[in-house]
Image 1 (cartoon, helix red, strand yellow):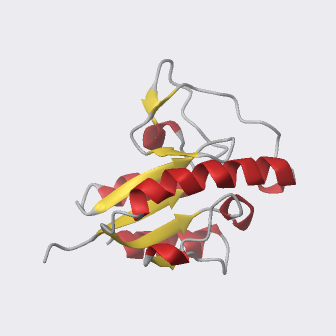
Image 2 (cartoon, rainbow, N blue to C red):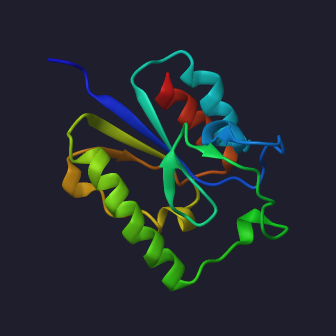
Image 3 (cartoon, rainbow, N blue to C red):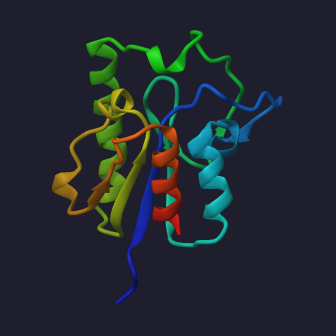
Length: 150
């Protein structure tokens, strides 16, 4: 039997590279979780990456993205309307349906804040284990991501 892959979903980041032109989503954003992911993903082959962009929708980790200035001054204090969250959740459910229905993933790791996770559908029906560290600050969560990748 072939080992199942794992899926990493990274939330949006206030920090981003200002390079002109297009960069893959995993390279465009430059927050803590993105730096940890880039450092350790090169050592494994069985992890696919999705990135949540500013409108809370998901894209492939290699999707080309232009630079956009982040909105607001404090990323952690962002709020989203119920309508925006619902619209993103509907899009993300269709997007994840294609990925997770195949049965090729055993685990999904969510590296994002709770508010961003609200834009994701319930993944219980896909028979995958969801890992979502919610305790502690950025340091313990980044450590959990490192350990999960390794």
